[in-house]
Length: 454
Image (cartoon, rainbow, N blue to C red):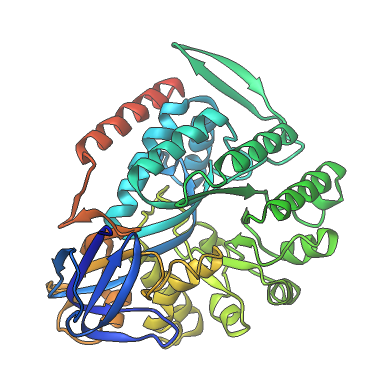
C-alpha cells in the first residue's frame, strides 16, 4: 500500500487557478503527492493515517523567495543595522566552521517548519561581499536541511571583484587564513551545483551573483565574472539569484550582458527606473519583494505596479536578522501596510493577492509552480493546517482575509512537506527541538569567542 494520509473536515484554501475555497473538505495524500482533493467527505476506500482538521484551514505551504543562510545565529547583535552588518561579516568570514553552518541550518529549518514556510530560497552568507563559498560549510548546511525535511533552494557564488577577501579555516582549535578570489569561488560553486544535482529532490543548489551598477560593469573583472556566471547558470538550467537591484541596475545589466531570463530571481528591486521595469516585463525575470527588509526602508519596490504589468512578484523575509523572522504571515501584513501607505489606499494588495505572493507566486518565482504553491491533485503535498479557533482569528468569516491580515506563524498547527508530517500540534515530529537549540547555542558561543565578541 502507498504511504497515505487523509486530512478530513478542513476548510481548504487551494490557491489553484480558480482560487477555490472548500468549506469542509478532504485531502488525500499518497507517496508524497496530493492524490485527491474535494468538498465533503472522501467517498473512496483508502488505508491511510487520518487527521481530523475540524476548526482548521488547510492551505499551501508558504514560499520564502529571499533569505540568507547564517542569519539565525547573528540576530540581536549590534546597536543598529550598520553595526550588525559589520559584526555579521566578521563572523561569517573569520569565526565559522562547518559545524556553525550545520547548526545554523538546523535552527533555521526548525523556525521555518514552525511558522509554515515549507520552501525557502537562501543565499549562502550575508551578501555580495561575504559569501561563504566553501565545500565543507555548504555540505554541512545541506546535510542539516536534508535531515529536517524542508524544501530549499540554496544559492552559492562569488564575492565582488576588486576587494580582498580573507577567510579563516578552523581545524582542531587553530586556524589558517586563506585569501580567495571571486573566480576561485565560482569554481567551487560549479562543483557544488553539479554535486547537488539529482541528489535530493527537495534541495537545489543554484548560482548567485552580486549586483553591479553601470559603472562597475565597465570593469573587465566584473564583466567577465558576470558573463561566466550567467553562462554557467544557463548551461545547467538553474536559477541565477541576485540580491539588491535598484536605481537602473537591471537595465544596465541587461544592456551590457543580456543577463536576465525566466530563471533570474532578483531580490529587493527598489526605486526602479522605467527601463528597469521594461526589462523585467520583456525578459520574464522574477522579483522577490522583501517588505520587512532594511532595503525597503531605503527605497520602494513597486510590487503592485509590477504585478499589473505582468511581472511575477513573490515575497521574501530577507531571513531572520537583524530584526526580522521567517514568519511569512508577518511579511504579508507588512506588504499590505507598506503599499497601502504609499498609495493612501487600503485596497492595494487585497488578501487574496497577498496570499498568492506567499504561495503560488513564490513557487512561480522559483520555477516550481507545477510542483508546489497550490493544493491540486498531482502536486507535491506541501501544506499547512492553521488553527483558526483562536480569539484573534474570530469570527469565522472569509478565511483568506483572516490568513493574510490576522494570522501569524504561531497559528500553524501542522506542517507537511512531501506528504511527511514535520510538525503536529506545534511539536516537531522526528526532531528534538531542545537538541537543535542547544547545538545552535554552542555554535553561537564558539563563533562569538572566535570573533572576539563574547
